[in-house]
Length: 204
Ligand code: URA
Image (cartoon, rainbow, N blue to C red; front, side, top):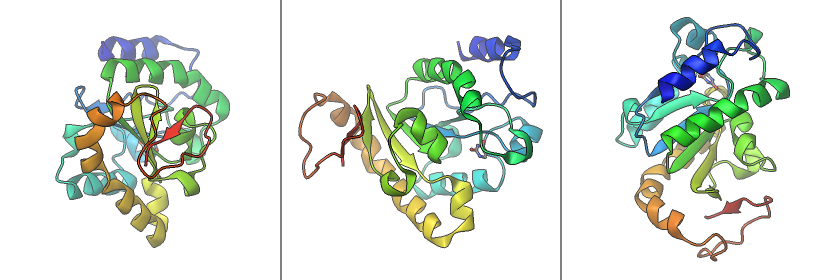
């Protein structure tokens, strides 16, 4: 099913950006889906997501939790490289959205980790990356954890520490994911006063 979705994207000539399509890779039965913003130059060259310096950091973070990159699925909201690594434009994000949403439906992870503000705002339009990174939200039937983009963490020791700290939450979150997802939508969570992020509920 993922393969036919990828083919559908290749055939869709209305999609913006004309570089290689970097659909995503990894374990299709993944409990955690990592979503970045858009491929960079190395990703475009190798036709794989997160294989540059940011990808190396992501691999290290995954390994520090005792996992392997191959345990998970990794993709981006925009699946072609914007020129000169500029931020993806709102209309580019919009055009790629229906495909990401189908991809998520097929993979059906319990947890989605967004890397950077663009991927975060796809799920949590009102969230702010500096305020909300590392928090855990319930969005529909998924747990969504916004995290800083690895590229930002490579530029700042403080951001790297924050990203590492957020990552450390993942093993326990994964262990508790079923329990957390079972809770009724409006159940009070221990010790939490969720900020009003429209319909998105912060868990802890
Ligand atoms: N940055 C992203 O957001 N995605 C990649 O695949 C690589 C770098």
